[in-house]
Image (cartoon, rainbow, N blue to C red; front, side, top):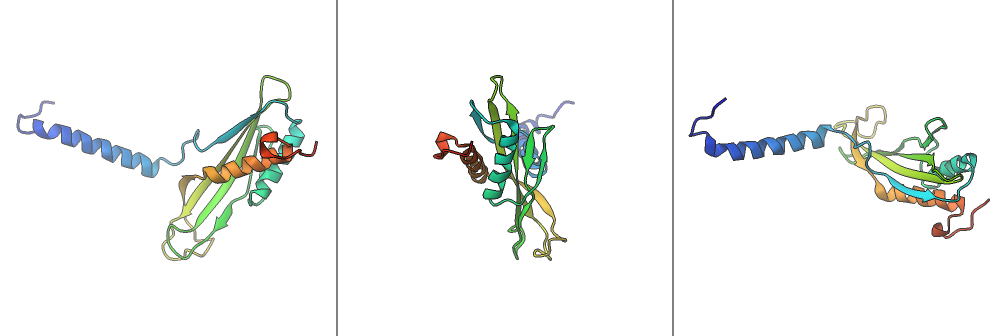
Length: 167
């Protein structure tokens, strides 16, 4: 397709507007980045899997998350949703923590990753009704994920957490 000479000066402005529109659409409807929002720590001389899972469960509880579920096959522990409703639109939040662990090449070593997913309530009229809530993905809470990771390390007796642990 050929453009007329009168349309050519507008081509850079149109392409810039198209890029802005594309960026806005991906930011609004793209959801969460599946690889984003993680805080992690390598544990070189770690406990057995059973003790690591228990430390992850306690870390979630001590990070103020409700109990959730454990998936040993995928190597993950997730909390329930921590719901905080508010009387205004886009002010109610819910968050859920996910802990993933996988063994390192060295026996007894683990890679522990934590992320906290955050959703916002976009319901306009019944914002305090948990049944009517409409949740939209907001992103991640890195500070809260760091807190959960710190709680897990404290359970394991990591020197960086300033504890001796219960081995």
